[in-house]
Image (tube, rainbow, N blue to C red; front, side, top):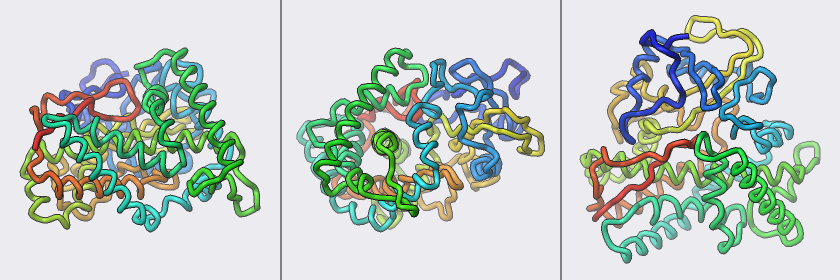
Amino acid sequence: MSDVRGERTLNYPIPAPAALEPPPEWTELRERCPVAPVTLPSGDGASLVTRYEDVRSVLADPRFTRELNAPGAARIIDTESGGLFNSPVANILAAEGHQRWRRMVGKWFTARRMAALRPAIETMADRLIDEMLAHGQPADLVTHLAFPLPVWVICDMLGVPEGERDSFAHWSDVTLSLTEYTEAEIDAAQAAFTAYLTQLVDGKRTHPGDDLLSELIAATDAEGTPMSDAALVATAQALLVAGHETTAGMIAKMVAMLLADRRHWERLLADRSLVRTAVEEVLRYDPNGGFGIPRYLHEDAEIAGGVVPSGTTVICSMAAANRDESAFAGAGELDPGRSPNPHLAFGAGAHSCLGQPLARTELQAVLDVLLRRLPTLDLASGADELRRVEGLVVGRLREVPVRW
């Protein structure tokens, strides 16, 4: 099979020339090969979808399933489980019934409930900025703000004691690994993570608190059936990983994107009402959006005017779709005032990101506080010097050095 240039099949994820730049292949693929053969880190083959309408339709189409442990499905990484998307956690939650699980957990992640958290998030952001100022400049925004804030938020929400949060960074990195860790390291981290969370759930059952885990332990579905112990542990693991890792990465990337061309920052300083649209725009514009969403096809289906055969694993690149000129005028330009902005950063359809109200609340709160506290904030290095963290399912930056 050949890629758009008539050469070998592309390896996926596709490398980019710089941390804040998209792979040039995205444009070629959207224009000339909207369903492209790719080789995954496992060595298995899959089909990559990069056009906005195609990605949106695949994510909303129930024929493209989450059954990534099906006999013919491609493995993402070369381990026994095949990676995050068909890990034991994913399989446990699938066994609960996705819509049932989503209804039980989703009661917590309402826009109103997340908005009620915003004052506490802003207070914590202020405290972290105070500590960064005391540290002195230049300072790494990832270390001082982007990482610790979401960890605090999600651990507080789940009721994880403050002194027990240090291991989550390592467990998360291993859980999200594509090429960074060996199978033995992944298995060991998963076992330790599961053991810790099993103990945490047991403790909440005995001594419930005002937190999401305690609420889920006491909750039942419409038929009066509670969530299984395995599902409670898997839910805690999924929320801890997704709730801090992706948001931490996005806070750092958001600030880097807005400061890379400081006219964007100046525009927000002049009009703080643009914070909401600016957050949506950096979510759309993010060239380092991570692996994307895999789906498995049990029957022949049409994408972009061609038939994709049953047994195909399809990778949806939301980041590539969000740069599609047919969906967004000036898609290659960052516009903090862009509205409407129907980006796909949180997916689409029945499986769109459950935690998106929390992510939006955190990003808007952090941006508001930074504009208020550090109007002179700037990058302490060139945008082209920023480096990605490679080998993970999510996209994030190693550091974002700033001065003020």
